[in-house]
Length: 271
Ligand code: MG
Figure 1 (cartoon, rainbow, N blue to C red):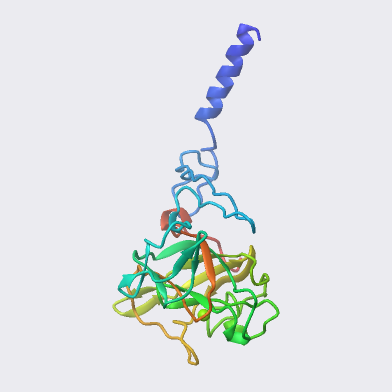
Figure 2: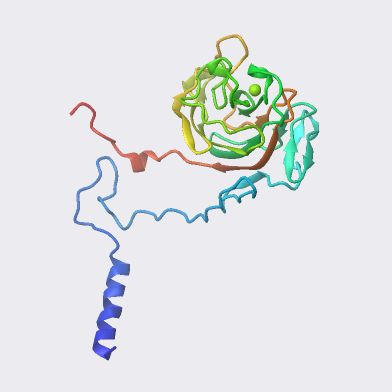
């Protein structure tokens, strides 16, 4: 390359680096940002994990908190005692009572876990491969072997138990690994009263089964759930329902709601 061409190339690279966006564009209403504003903070870099396959367990994103990576259950407890579930071949097997994290999380997070139902499948309806993921220890996303096994719809896999059935049944066969990806916005309480309900989105084996579903309250058996005020952090609980459901690759990432400064005045409705 001729020196002059090289200089031109260097100058244009520098110009790009200094001018990633625009400042002669309109302000996004209610914010301080221009459309395509290069001064807006760059998103934090996260290295994504590798997805699991049936044969091989994947890895967590670089900023996730590993709750169970196959090694041990040191992040978990059974009541106030050490975790009672057995760990075998990198898998945690339900048995000996519910399991709950020692740490508390919230108010908003992304939770990933993988589970597989016992083989051969025994029992029917709620008696087959039953477990559950309790967010804040009280909002159950149902875990159930729903492969060729019907039950009441609000008790199916990824149902918000006792309230909202999944949009579809995307269950895999017992013995095959299934993934849950849960995006949970915890409820907010003010002076003991509900200010904002909990909201959840769930992907079951990559298929959306709950889409920004607003929870009616807690998830009790045979009665309508209601909200009881609680702190903005709580444990994750895994249910032992008497079936040796196995878990692997459990991780969590705290997430933020968009800031009011970034949302601005938002869209104009009805125009
Ligand atoms: Mg359950």
